[in-house]
Length: 492
Picture 1 (cartoon, rainbow, N blue to C red):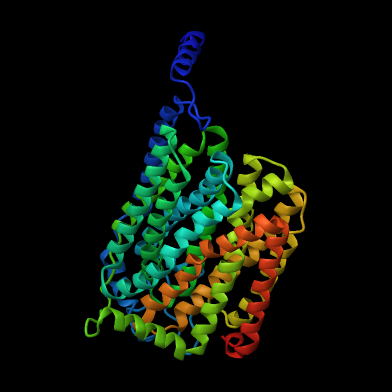
Picture 2 (cartoon, rainbow, N blue to C red):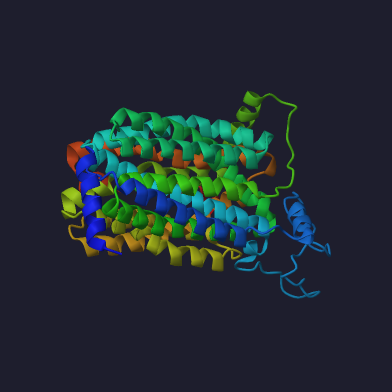
């Protein structure tokens, strides 16, 4: 093949079509299609392998797991891979990766990884698109995130009520398809060269709606597919998968932006959401009790009243709130930190964005290893405070590799914090209020964009380092107060 002639033909096409205002060559749209198709085919093959139909006996076991009062001595209760304990012997220990032995949970696990890929690409692409492509300010970046949060927070509360009353699988699929549609819209506008900041305001509203419906249902599906016996292990394994996506998602996003442009990132993100929806459709979820005797608003009030009565659940939700609201928004301002403080570009941006994910792998492995051990309340206390202090230390860094190292360490403790807090809530909450309580838990993550608005103002006024450090310090102090005033958490 004459490569010189091919290059000359490609150059003539580029000269005739010109370059868009975003600096992306139009011929890259073909590369986008090829890359997206290859990614879709390979991911579909993985989904086919890991999401095979479950054997009938496993389905029966999965149906029995969610029962509120399982009988330990029943002969059919243990999974096939776990032998029953010997009479008079030590108590049965849950397998470190026992949840993965159930095909229903494996499908949910795979779909969640795809969804998390899309979500982390959204964070990377949105930050780069607003701050570097559209020439926006940190305040505008925070405003886009805040719009998403303002929609997601109230919708999450409604989503929890819906998860307690309707088909959780269908709710999750519908919300995931909404997120995919929003991402496809942004990719089209970028390729057409007609993207504006107000377009991102609209798509942020759609993403907030999708997140508010999807996350409560997906959290409850963890319990539905793993059961009471494996819920602690399931949360740890799910967290490990999510953190793998947290590593590879920003890294792939930064590479795609650097080599092909932000439009490719949004297309790949859309494909991830589509694969998440397709995988979730294969779940066979047992029916759950639905309380139709009371109205929807009365059901929501009942869930809030339950949280108000249970001091342990309330304290755990507060611990789960402070870090997402005051610390996690710093991820959205990595582009500002890398550009203004470190003086680097997109490759360093993608690598730094994945640093916490690298550290999260050993953290989640520890949680999976110790999911059946006691004293996790004390573990939650220690890792929460250490994580906050490490983010404060990160704000003082002025060179890439020290900053990267601190974030890796922070990732270890952040992974343990998130997985332990989630599993303690899942195991403490009354099953009748599970969907509504887990909606409050997911609302804590929906506050990230709201915290991003506040942090965006602080970054604009005081600079990135001071904003990062002060927000993390406040969150750490608030969590310490909760632990001091609720000693029952330390005894969990």
